[in-house]
Image (tube, rainbow, N blue to C red):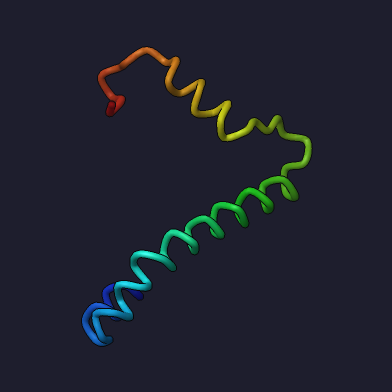
Length: 68
């Protein structure tokens, strides 16, 4: 919604900075915060790294519902 409002109401340069630089940074911060909350709320859960998760995903056989 912020991106849409900036696109419609602010100079295009402001929207471009937000869309190209701030949005990826904010997404990274959101996932980092989610990871920290998950570690705090579920301390006994079996946690795996992002790399391990990606490796398991790519080893799965192709199924009709999977989009590759």
